[in-house]
Image (cartoon, rainbow, N blue to C red; front, side, top):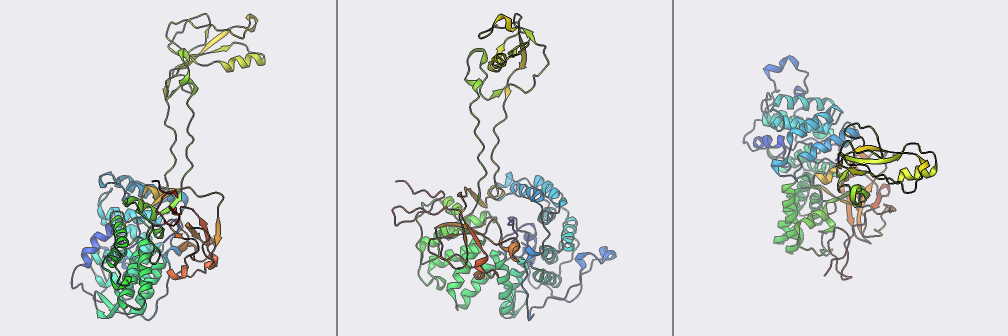
Amino acid sequence: MDQAGVVMQPTSVAHALSGRLSAFALIALSALLLTGCPMNNESQTNPSLLSDASLPRFTKLPLFDPHRKSFECKHEAEVNPPITSEAEALFQQAMATTSHDLWEEDRNYVKAAQLYEQAMKLGHWKAQFNLASLYLKGWGVPQDTERAIELTEDLMRKGVPAAWDNMGTMYMGGIGSLKQDASVAYAFWQRAADMGSMASQAYIGAKLLGNHDEPPSFWGNRSIGLKMLECAVAQGSGLAAYELGVTMDVEGKNRVRALQVLHEGVKLGSERSAGSLSSSFRHGRDLVGRIPDISRADRYHVLANALHLNPDLRFPNLDKVLPLPPTPLPKWDGNKQTLIDAAKAVVPAPPAPSKPEAPPASQRTGRAHIPEGHALPEQPQWPMPAQYETTAAPQGGYWIARLMHPHSARHLAWNAAQVPLRYERGEPFESSREGLEVADGRILFHYLGVPVAEAPPPQADVHPKVAQGAARQACLPQPLRRWRGGGDPCPTSGIWAASVPADHPAAAVFNGWHRQTYVRQGQPFPDPRDAHLDIEPSWITWIWWDQANPHWPSDVEHISLDGQAPTT
């Protein structure tokens, strides 16, 4: 997963096993459900496009080899084009307009398409990927499958593994001018997996887990299949975690590890992992030691439903609400949203906008009163010459008194003490010369206009992940509390965010908004090698977010979103 964290996951969501269906998926799913898909050796050709055989869609690839002897794990985040902050801001705005947290009728695909187009022009490959998806389905733009293919091909030229993955999906679904051909589809998926596409690695990896060949469902190449799944898990694939965990459970050799992998799948947003664990705990299956645990089953069920409604969700702090046994479950008030929110990632809350003080003018009386929520304009609505103090107001509105020729500190102080006064048209100006002498000179009244409604106070920016419902905001304790990894136990309970130096080879894969975990005091910090990431724990810096569950009474832990003990 890239540093920004992909919410509308730009992977071959068409793979029926992914559980994260986008526009591509809805078409490819029906293709995968077809029986007897031909696995021929003929190259895909289209008579209308033969004049340009150099198109990426016609790339000559080796046939899919289900019995390959080796696989080198590569991560797509390491080869995807860089993204500028300006382009990312547009992308996140687009994501927010179609968030799964919005009612369907409130999602604005037209606006999303416009923002994706802008971000794409600034080099944002994920925006281009999602725009292709909109063209494929005709959401927010006219349906144009050829345009979707062209956008995908452009990303293929740029070396984006996910684009090669989706070209395979398009062939499997027979999209637009592409003739349906499973052989070609698998060839593209194989190329994508070798380039680093975690979607292809997860999909093909699962297909290779059979004990014997039974195409097109599966093939017997277990060692390579497991390597592909492990590589995809390291990149953050919840689908791969589900497939890997289920496989380990079926094998029955290390069910403790299988349980941990499926639990990790829930953190990575796998609805199927959550559903599987809910069922296992409810029925006391072998995976959980044949001991039913209805409380744990109910919590996994809540999270599975949440992921079904919003596939953008990630639960990196799952252990805050649902630790694996033998750790006791913290007390929960039964509010589903509390459970969901507490398991989400936390992101920095923006500085609260300063609350403006009540304008003194609204507290004045008589002519000096200005209605609350209103203010005089910076410039009068129309020009008006200054009037002598002995005259009447030629125009209704607010006027302010000024000495004609101030030449001393006392004069300047008098001018500064004056406030705008309201006069109706034809009303004589009140000549209040308190503090002045006749020799101080004459007074002029200057027109300021009539009050206008003030703009509402600026609102704090909402973090894009919060707008998408994928995270919640919290205040990072100051001063920052850091801890270096290396096997030492956690010094303080709470949410800890992890990162490695920017020049670390795995920084693109590891660093991200979701790289958090809830650790209890005295427990070890997670070892990235358990998630198939080649990172020594000593390279990791952990930053404490607090957010620890309070204990009340002293020996009972309660789930909390603010760290405060529950009240009686």
